[in-house]
Structure formats: C-alpha cells, structure tokens
Length: 124
Image (cartoon, rainbow, N blue to C red):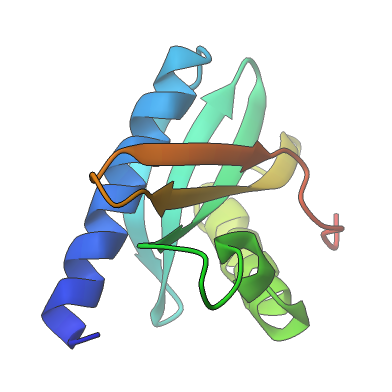
C-alpha cells in the first residue's frame, strides 16, 4: 500500500476511534501528540483517568487482525511516549492506562471498531 494511502487509512482509523470513544463518554484532549520523535495517536480522559490510545487500522484482516500489530517493541515504545507525556504535563499523580483501538474497514468502507481497555501492562 502506498504511503499516502496508508496515511489516509490511519487518519480514517483515528477519526473512527475518536468518534467511538466520544460515544463512550471519553473526552479527547489530544490527537497525534508529538513527543520524543514519536506520536501518541489519542490522549483522552475517561472520567479522571488519562488514557493513551494506540489506534491500529487495516483495510481487511487478510494479513492478520490490526491489534496483533501491537507487539512487545511497539508496547514498549507506546509506554515510553506515554511516560514522557506524563512528565511533560506533570500528570505523575494521575490514574493512567493504555488502550488499543483496532479499526477494520469492510469492503464497503464501513468501520468495525474494537476497543481493548488496559491493553497491556505499563510501567506505572
């Protein structure tokens, strides 16, 4: 898939994830937050909990489920970025978790959204 098509798929996935989370009552406080030469896809508040959301989007599942792409190395990187964000915004006393939202688009372009709360152990 060409880079521009992949970027567009990623943006669509993030838009779908943000809309889904808003529907659950989350407040989106940041998208594509740049930190440590990386991006946090979505930063949200679920009540008083700061939630770092990794969004994984795929046009189909022929090469596996999108959530399967969040392996150990990616988990460690997400945790690093989240930790840097916490320090930058002085949120050390906040309740924090990391969620993964997998978005798969069917052939008609309809999104199927799956949300994994507290998707993996973080260093806090």
